[in-house]
Amino acid sequence: KRGGIMIGGKRRPVQVVFYDDESNAQTSARLTEKLITEDKVQFLLGPFSSPITMQTSVIGEKYKILTIATQANANVIYERGFKYVVSVLPPATAYMKLTLEMASKLQPKPKTVAIMALNNPFGILAAEGAREHAKAYGFDVVYFEKYPAQASDVSAFLTQIKAKNPDILVASGFFQESLLIVKQSKELKFCPKMIALTVGPDVPDFTKSLGKDADYIYGSAWWLPNMGYKGRDFGSSRDYSKAVTERLGREPNYHVASGTAAGLFLQMAIEKANSLDTDAVRKAFGTMDIETFWGTVAWNEKGQNIKGASGPIQIQNGKLVSVYPESLREAPAAYPMPCWDKR
Image (spheres, rainbow, N blue to C red):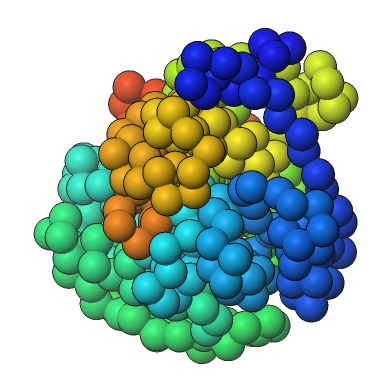
């Protein structure tokens, strides 16, 4: 609508070429090659997932075409010495940073933390990051163990944790693992002051499946409409969500928002470089420290977003609310968690 991106005093219209990679790494790699060699694209907005981006970014690096990785935050992607890949998401190790920062300010202050790590790359990185952040905020980490991916029973791990009587349980995992951990915690009458999970509580079916047992459970989300960030072009997170809902007929999740953010960040870097030269645009990313509807972002020399972190959310009376930081929250954290039989 504005006529394109301003470069050298002129507006350059943007042509977007896209294909469906069907979440298949080989297909994605083939289409990335096609985008570069046949469609002659100048920049890439990357695919979903770290494993697929691991492969497509190799092709971008080969041709010196910059990839804005919309949904890929595994540390290994950015530790290969590549020059032409930058991330929208912060590193997986930052996933629980703000949750533990918030916990350090709660009263009565929790002191001990137990950590369960899903045994896959994301789960391990998120849990290891949680352990380091817990120590940095003065917590005593009394338990750290990996549990199997796609586990159908984690009661043995929870029994060991219950014996340690931690104030906080932190568990990395996805939707099914998070459901299982809450259900089996109740079965074992394990009742810490706080249960903080990675992926799960932000999914509507989590509350539908657990009912009132979902209340008081914390999750983390890279982005939600109610997080309160604001910036150029889209206004606030809520303004952005309203615009997308009007266009798509549904409220956006963080996958949608990160795609928009990738395009916005690329535009801002191009404008700052005042050039379409790949190296100039990549250099511009290293000088940017900004807030947008997506949140606060800045990039290191590896291309990682080092400023952002997933925001703590909590289910309160069946509703998902943002609880930290104080400047953005919808409501204060409900703490401590009452035991299951006192709900």
